[in-house]
Each structure stands twice: as C-alpha cells, then as structure tokens.
Amino acid sequence: MPILESRVDRDTLSIEFTAEFDAPIERVWALWEDPRQLELWWGPPGWPATFTRHELTVGGESRYHMTGPEGEVSAAWFRMTKVDPPTVIEFDDGFAGDDGEPDLSQPIIRGRVSLEAVSANRTRMLTTVSFDSLDDFDTIAGMGMHEGMSAAMGQIDGILLAG
Image (cartoon, rainbow, N blue to C red):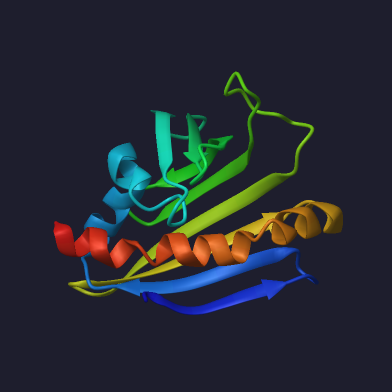
C-alpha cells in the first residue's frame, strides 16, 4: 500500500493523502497525464473509470465516468486550474449529468496534487481535496470518498510494476 498517511479534517474541510511510490517523478506524473493510465487507478476497485476527454492544461477539461459492479454509472468532470509538469496539478472536480457536462448544483471538490522526488527512483505524492462548505464536505465524505480514494491509490503500485 503506497499511502503513508491520510487525514480527514472537518475543521479545514479537507481530506489529504500522502503516498510514496518506487518510481521516478516523471513516471508518476504520467499516471495523471495519460488518460489510459489514469483509467487504471482513478476509480476504486470494482468501479473502473473511463475518460472520454482529458486535457491536462490550464483551463483544460476532462470528462469521465465510473462504472459500478452492477452496471451503474457515475459521471464526473475535472477542470484544470494549475498544471506545472511534473510537480503540480490543481483542478476542480464534480459530478456530471447524463450528457457528461458538469452538474453545478452538486458539490465541487478542489483538488491539488503535488509530486516531489524523494530520490531518483522514489516519488512522494501529496493529494489534497477540499470543499467550499461543511455541507459539501459532509455530503462527499458521507459517500465514502476517503475510503474510495484510498482504495484507488492502492492500485498504483501494480500499474508502476507492470511498466
């Protein structure tokens, strides 16, 4: 399990994960940059992700959905607010309607990923998600976001080992 530490903090309306991987920073960056690699781990086990659009540039957008074990579909989106390869990605994330477009009546999650080379072949990834209100935090946390992201990130080591 690559996660070293996780923290759910209602006071700061945030959930944070610190993970380390036995791979150079550019290789871990590729897990975010390449939508086919992102699909391999973004959804938790049993809920694989499918990205139909992925633009890792400031202002770029992604559209994706996760498919559950009974065939249920949960559509979502990203909008990139900061991209500084290979160290920082910031994005807004939310639910989408049946047409795949953002449903702005649902909570928006503010994501930040920072990558740091611990050594030539080891990378630390700090992922923080934050919310605009306690209601949004409680809604998303209540859906199991902490557990889901922990399980999703737990798949990364296998992807890195596979090449």
